[in-house]
Image (cartoon, helix red, strand yellow):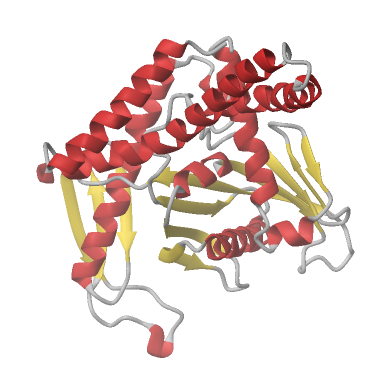
Length: 349
């Protein structure tokens, strides 16, 4: 049973925020954000409390012979709905990751497997791009290095929208592919891999960067040749001296490249700080779903069998074509539900 005192505190806080915004008191933007964050929790509280009230009324109706049959039907409905409502409320009350509502930086790099790994990295990029389009998110390539065969050496994309990090944070890790490469004449199945990292986009208030810690170099952008070669020194490379992190951007505008590179650097530093804090909180963080451990093999895409297997939650789906086409909803929902179940178990609920 969820403590009613806790629910009452949340409702009172929600009412206070509503009144404060109406009166124009305090930081309106901060109040509005907290109010918006609390709204789904309040809705679950109201649904749960309404069921409890309905239960009490139905039990009273049992004493009336004329209403007994109706009361019994109502009790069956309420008792069937209560467990689901209580679990939904428990999930709504779980501690929120402060980064869940943020946009994200997606980084994909080939792992073992040579050219085939680079081609698979390109397939993953298109998979996430299609998923983002289906969600109505913005998807912009920040930096991309392609191979001669059309694969990806490295790509960084900026994904903008509502709750992007919350939906994509479980994608970080090693993605393995089993298939016959286009370069294989003997028809043998090869195993290759690519690494995916999803980082919450950092804002200026999230991370402070000392300009004295930066070395900024300009250089000529590389291209595919001909008209695509940038003949001016517009590309920017920023090195963060304390950590050794290096970020590059090679758009046409040097000013824009500085902005992009600083945003990527800020995001990576923010991710390092989040990892440091999370590691201090949980010694077994690497074993948890969504840990963000880049070295963890999380998923296998088996093309001959049309199968995708997520090893963290023992999920296997035989719809690989749809998944590579961006249909990730079932997988992400399952990962989210598993993570919530772990949190509930840790809280003893």
